Figure (tube, rainbow, N blue to C red):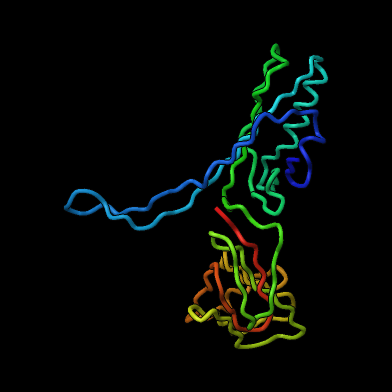
Length: 232
């Protein structure tokens, strides 16, 4: 089944899926032009967006029934923000995307089988694990995948704490104070909040955000490390 925001397309309308095409992550090379010599210097490769195209048929000769089904499909394919898209054969992974293309049905050819829905992954173009893993800070853990994971550090404080640090051995985050409440350090977005209120003013100047990565690692501090593995 094709699930978008937890709702199956097949329960919305009597569609017949013709094909599902998942495009690769778009690669955007970053280069620096040379001042005098010909050519440019390659700097790095940046990952861009990913698109998913779903083609289907809605073979209902009754025009009123067919149009009602098409309207239901259009409403199902939300365009206001990115939602979780789950596809067959990827039971343990999902894509985060928004609908960027709606079907263009023919009024005459009710038998057509090439209606198309297009989805685009903007913020997170990678296949993401549906399972969020967790371990206590200070414990060694291993992150699978071939793309940087979604990773955060969480902690619940009954009382305010001062001079708290989190480190992976290469980078260290030091907070001069953490108020009581639920702390969340989002390592991908590089934000820190308690109960949804930013405490970035407690982030010391000498700090540097921990870089999410795959492989074996240990993050020291007090709290829990939570992550979702990702694949290109």
